[in-house]
Length: 433
Ligand SMILES: *Cc1c(COP(=O)(O)O)cnc(C)c1O
Image 1 (cartoon, rainbow, N blue to C red):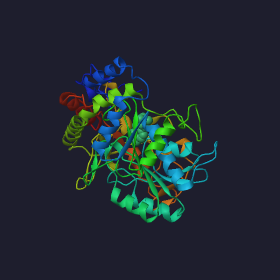
Image 2 (tube, helix red, strand yellow):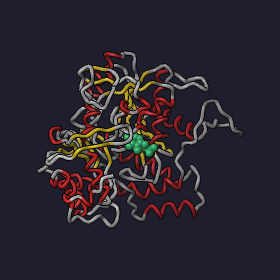
Image 3 (cartoon, rainbow, N blue to C red):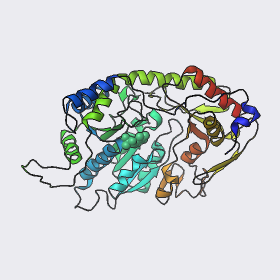
Image 4 (spheres, protein in one colour):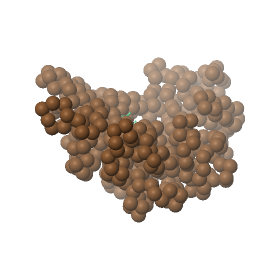
């Protein structure tokens, strides 16, 4: 690895004594109280006041009728996908997935936990390209996807980095085609679109309390729905699908997905701080926007007229003509420095050298080896991506690959001080020297 600290461009910058994180948990003290209470009262399993309170408070914050506390956002996504799949296609035989032989339209630019449940249920994810205004599923590409695969009835979409997608357009298309939506709001808890909380837009929606999210239980997730029947089904599935009988009686497949009352204690202690965390993340985003204004870069965009993000991660995109020469393999990357230019690999390397954590933009799903042979639909054409090039062989523009090529997530920890952030901003400037 290149020795950034020996590079004359970085002279005078001292490494951070304590690591500046991308996004780490921030405890406030109330968490301890609810965990202690669970232990003292012996309610330490998957039943108890903390779970009930978390479900009640989340319903209130989001505006949804029912919330089901689960072990992880991934578990919630699995049950959300399964609920929608069974509503569409019926209950599968044991040993078969609920989506066998079915295609599902999925966000392409997201974390793989969004789309894996489609595969858990035997379905085939068809990836839908990203738009540049919010970095979420492109309504025009979704429309195109329905032209190519009119039989599809399920859409799984995420709000990336806490920025809501174009929900009016996406929901309108879904409605016209009679399709259901699973909404992955794992990164966007507290963000709103036209005044409505994310988590309200899916037939089933999902939140995550993973350690790096805006509020955390160390782990944990929530399934949101307005259907009492679905909420009860998810709760039953998550506790091994036990029937109401004196013995263990099973009529359908079960999972061990329920939230623990200890974890729920941590979440319960965190929930009152959601707004405070959002305000801190917003200040971080705005300081970057100001501090990077003179560079050939843009911050991750959002639709200021219609949406209020939760600013979970601040990201930047380097202008095309300010990108130095760079190539990425499957697991490594190379670049050649040029004055006045830079690239994500150089900036992330420099941040690491000074003990700060950034990350490349989530690598699009259609570029992942596991999903490379799946269909991928762009606005101007469709086909399998064959390289990291964002202009495909058929001339179609692959927006996801372009954003991945030029974008990176900046240190966005809510405990980062303004002074530390100034140094991060200075390091980024030096990369362009
Ligand atoms: C974190 C995350 C998940 C998974 O949540 P877990 O609680 O870690 O299982 C799903 N989707 C997105 C977009 C995420 O960022």
